[in-house]
Amino acid sequence: MNIVMLLSAICTGIATFCCAMLFINFVKSLDIENSSDDEEKNAKSKLSLSLRMTLPMVKIFRPFASTDNMIPRCEYLDSRLAMAGVSDAISGRDFLALQMAHVFIGFLFFMLFWYCGNMIIGLIMGILVATSPGLWLNSTIKKRHTEIMRALPNLLDLLTLSVEAGKDFISALRDILIKRKNDALNEEFSRTFTEIQLGRKRSEALKALSVRVNQSDLSSVLNAIIQAEELGVSIGELLHIQGDMLRNKRFTLAEKLANEAPVKIIIPIVAFIFPAVIIILVGPIIMQAVKMF
Image (cartoon, rainbow, N blue to C red; front, side):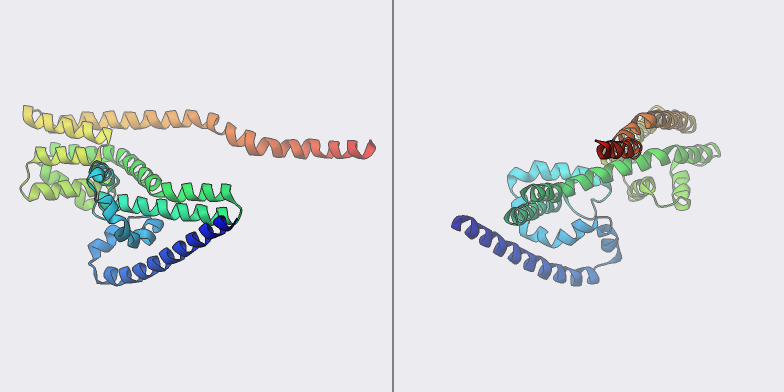
């Protein structure tokens, strides 16, 4: 019992010290953020609130994320952050340090609830806190890919009309990007257009876009454009075909999701609605039977 109390006291002291350091670093980071430019603020605003609150702890765990053994993991996270569109907000090394910080905070939650006698709740809370950065990153990538898939056919239609009207591909892309809303697809193509303006070859910039986003529909369109440029095929006709294919694919996916809806709705009906109906219908009968017997 004395050992348990000693360990609990040590963990409580560590947790208090970490909370104090977190608060101090957070206050210091506010001055840095106030003095930073608008681009850095906008980049950091893409992160979730929980990640922004724990960003000051990155400095503590950055040495552990900078070892040679962590280089492959950092490179993998760099590619994942680029797919999520937040690579300008945080690097792979810092995100790995952020994951380590969340693991440490999750362990503190577990120890705190375990000391209070709620080990199961502490275990659940610890797992949720430790895995929250990875879950957020996967969710952000999925939402971004879905947004790109929905917006791509409309962009291809506009490009087709502009190219068939006599504009070249770059001029048509520039005019369309100016008039479109600033969504995920617009951000990626704007970055690619900037790279082309700075002197990068169009094929190389499009390949970099395909690797950076890693979305199947966008990659197929970009590869087709690169091949058409190399073979001298008409880009206007190619864009028209790709737009029709992607639109048909989007409609097929919508029909598939609509057909799956009746099957998915069975779970909440059986788990929540059906028991309530049974209680309402059978409950009074059971109560009357209990009174009689």
